[in-house]
Amino acid sequence: MGVLFGMLLRYMKVKDDSVLTLISFPGEILMRMLKMLILPLIISSLITGLAGLDARSSGRMGSRAMVYYMTTTVIAAILGVILVLGIHPGNPKLRGDSSTSAPKNQEVNSMDAFLDLLRNLFPENLVQSCFQQRPGENNLSPNTTVLKTVPVAAPNQSESIIVSRKKLEYKWGMNVLGLIGFFIAFGICMSRMGERGKVMCDFFNILNEIIMTMVSMIMWYSPIGIASLIAGKIAAIGNLEVVARQLGMYMVTVMVGLVIHGGLILPAIFFAITRKNPFTFYQGIFQAWITALGTASSAGTLPVTFRCLEENLKIDKRVTRFVLPIGATINMDGTALYEAVAAIFIAQMNDISLDTGQIITVSLTATLASVGAASIPSAGLVTMLLILTAVGLPTQDISLLIAVDWLLDRMRTSINVVGDSFGAGIVDHLSKAELAELDAAEMQIERALGETSDGEESDDTAYDRRQAMPPGDLP
Image (cartoon, rainbow, N blue to C red; front, side, top):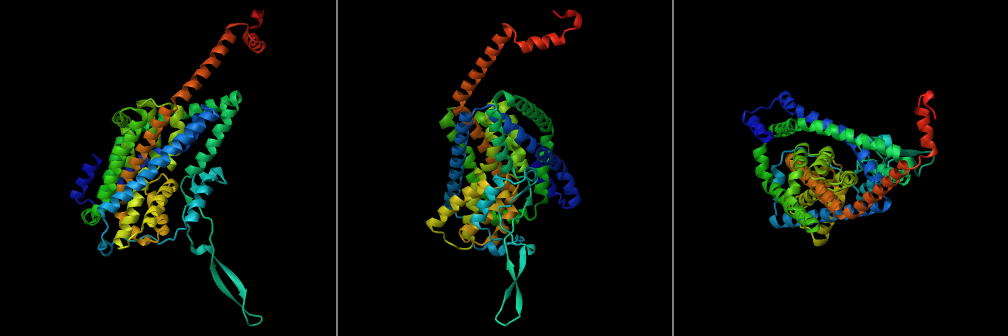
């Protein structure tokens, strides 16, 4: 409906900004509601998921998830490289035809980007992490220059020179990686406290249930919001026909790669490990896939992904609460594929032939850059600077890709969400024995407690019972 309404608006030549703003407004409200739930959902889900596991189970579950995430991300990057080299969509003539405004040319140092990733993982201020993060890029703004006075040859004279100096800066946006790192440690420490941590565990369990109830309410509104987002974006885009004609093969290359990865590779991995029908799994996560397509945000789709996996596919809550928040932050299969394709496409446009070492560098950097990409719309364009700088390609040519990024961003985000969901299903299948052992141990404890209460009551229980009796009924 969103696509049809957007094309109708284009046919009617609706270009007024106020009208387009009103058309997109219901979708903006949906995005704001979903983003509002990200912080409490990450906190409650991670803590309750880890509190329900022991150290051995959480370690094994985490290692399985990380192996899956890294394997699928590397496969996606390699697939992108193979497709872009085989199809060869880059044409040097495209650079002259582009009238798109270029972003500020920024040089990104790979060491700075890696250090920023670690800085985000260990935030110095937890409250600041809720709304600011390190950008993963090294900007030298006018404010970062300092005056330095040095002596010269002539006596009693000196001159001032301007020296550029790096300065740590923060940008707006939730530091999800830092929050995940802290609350994983919090949940593990709470689970080791045993019975003393039960009150906190109950609190976060109830918080999680409240948030999921709110998500169910938002889902009734989501079709309107998603249709509004897509219609407004299609109506607002400029020369769609010219852009499609210029960058058609590039778009086809990315789309084919995403379809192969999401429609063949991920289901094949899922079937090989679990022996379950992947298309039944797809039916269960359909609502999350559509939401990702509309919102272009993995983190924004997280509340819906939880609901689909837990209610539709009956995945164990301890798995989803532990695996999904981490996956939405570091598992970016679609982004890795897209960035590998885009980097080599820019090289082809500039008639630059990359050797084998540079192609391997593109694959590895795309994998690592996708891990550092924020789970927000168009985050891949920021980390693209890192890949282009790593192999010495011109960063200003990213301006060409901005014209079609709104569409490709939605498609790669939907593949990111599908990859997270399949990962949760695989980890759930591999962890069934351990989870069953935990359930059996809990049942034994409850049975033992029940037998104690059926027999002679303890002094504390007897005291509480006497305190509750009226004075005339005391034995």
